[in-house]
Length: 461
Image (cartoon, rainbow, N blue to C red; front, top):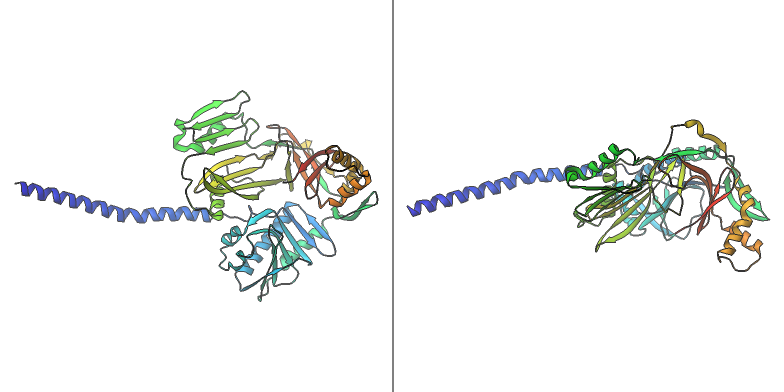
């Protein structure tokens, strides 16, 4: 009898083990399919409206630079096709000392890891990765066989193929930029020449009224944002409202979502899986997918900076984004030191997310009108004495002749372009000013483009 019971028990155990192992075999393919589908969703994200240039320069007898988004985007879309075509051919890679060419220069806001281009374009020829780790500028010579890449350290790598590359379309766009932009060169102040081709007769909207995309006063909308972020865990979230109407949501002291009264959204995630592959390309895709799923990717935003970070001993990446409005770059007040979008990824998780996006307030469109911007040379002429005095007062200049200091400032200016300056202090009905930005290696001088008054001097990291 005991033997029969033992046989029955053994049979039950064997059947149970068989079912368990069969279940693993059945479930494993579905798990793999699910993971594969997730990879497909991430890899389907289009990158080249998110990685794009800050400016484009046409180099000939002149050096004409435009920051206008429409021109930058047109050139960029054509160039991405050229770059992909080039790298999918047999390419000769060679380092060169400098660039002296006629053609087109495409400038990214900061150096971008080369892996984003190689993996984003699915390039098999990766020989040049070892020669250049990052890309700051692309140079497109007039010949049909070459593209030159410059990295963060100012190192140039020439990529040459034996196959003729069609650059006709991108050259047509560059001719359109020249034909539709008026420039004046060699403006002179106090006998000191400004050796730049400066845009003149530029039209710009003024004033421009904006509001934050997130309205803290819309309680239903704010609640929906929190529910989207926390999902099924929303019922376990603690909510608190501060005196200034900023709202905080906290889950187990691990996931914190804060929506500030001015529309700045922040969240911090100290839980979840921060162990994973430390790969900049996959981290970038994870950041973009999170952004797409959570409020959507901001219109006209672009990748401005990539940094390595370390959080609690784990390595990851910080991706910072800027954006343009009405075809011009937004310049935040340095008092606030804000970025339009900032995302930190460690392992497989987004651990920090900040978002501060402005949209045009169309409640009274008659307030905005198109005006002619002042000539930037005239603005400099009226303000150069003030700039010199500021340097003396701040101890940035020795007790030299004031004229020497003025000339040094003028000769240090590398770029002059139009933008919109956002003091970013108000939730809505915020007036952003049309400004001329005059950039040196270490500073940005920001002037009101209509009145010519100095607004702010910003330090450049």
